[in-house]
Length: 340
Image (tube, rainbow, N blue to C red; front, side):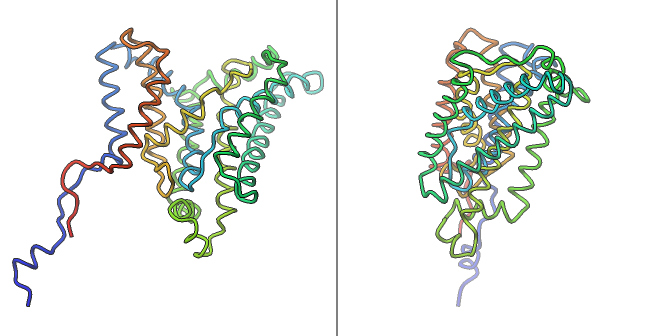
């Protein structure tokens, strides 16, 4: 017979544990905001915060798509080059239809629709080569990264593709105008984030992504169409790249071989910083949003201080990725975890 002390000892401890993987990104963002304010009070000005959110939108939107790919155990290194190629084709097509349909909204809508089709198609190619072709995602997307980058270089003949000035005037509000005090890119970011959160956290598809990333073989035995789900994650990634490109093109009105450089690094960094496990099996859209904000905030702070060169922004991002992965591997916690 078990004594009362023994029964008490066997009861699981209810002591709360502070999980750094869950709360870490929010605490890091809060700390960065405090540091930014201490370095320069202008950091919290309305203009700077609006600019920070707008710049976060590009990487944040792409990172939402990357969350699905990484959760399902994949990786996509081609997103920056894909964005460059899509923007280049958009500009070429819109410039060429000016004589036919003019420089109005119809031309802009044609370019946006084309971008969506191209993004979905590029994502499907990555997914099909990975699943049907049985090629590692790293190799596939490394190859398409080079293909897309070389295509935009070819289209621009080694230079820059410039959007027609009149079309840019029509297209310009997509980036520079606002609604209820928030720029349009931020609203697109919010919409994509909400849809991504619902899809990953509240649907069977999201559960399938998690199951495949955790153990692909078990997922197959569980009657999950692994190839279809994994391919769809790359299609979602391509669609997100399209949305980011659509709101990016009116910012500069041009495309070149340097467009989207290192966007893949920033997108993956945002995902990993947000708590999504790099090897797959666990993803957090909310964390990804915080990760994108953290990366943009770091760059913003570097612009406000001379203590660290702004050219070291890539170094800071690389260090953050390494630290985030170390935290995932060690599963560090504050306080005692539950005991059995």
